[in-house]
Image (cartoon, rainbow, N blue to C red; front, side, top):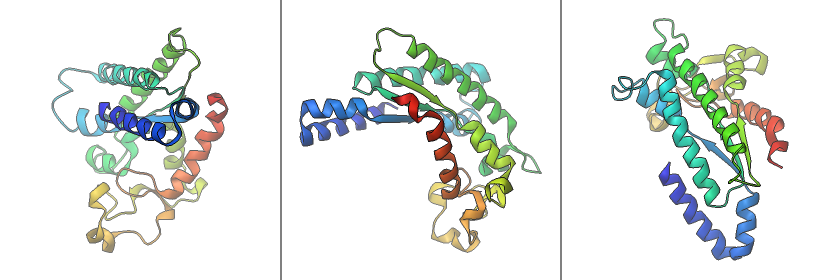
Length: 226
């Protein structure tokens, strides 16, 4: 996350160079920042490697990551951000790749990952509440944005939202491929119509799913930033 802050510092320099210090400060303070962190820590670190689980139970690991999120938000404030939304984790155990890895023969949701996501979201919500109460961070809007239950609703009720498939992705076999593994070699195996799928690949929602999810979040929380 420190790398993200360094990139933001570079962005600030470019804004200042384009419009000057005073105008840049206004732009930076009035912009809305959405912070998303933790998904890879759960799926790729806690459950897929042996390094964390011997030292942390689910609640302990949620607390461990929440502390980093807390510091990141304060660092972002220090760089001038004043309207900050912290996006919670989705039901990671229900994305196609995690069903394949931990869902057993029937590829059910990997409930241990979902439990950690719920625990982490509770910690993140607590982080937001604590930051709101800090007198040294005035004139700032900290908002927790829930994505867990909106996405879970799409997964559990696909037909309600116009989908046909919620347990596999469109790309490749739909069971595990994600990111760079969705490439020209996977095209012959890919679905012909991604709009019928909740997930584009083994990890990420489809464009149609995002078009449903984003307005839900915006309509619920946008006024809280002002």
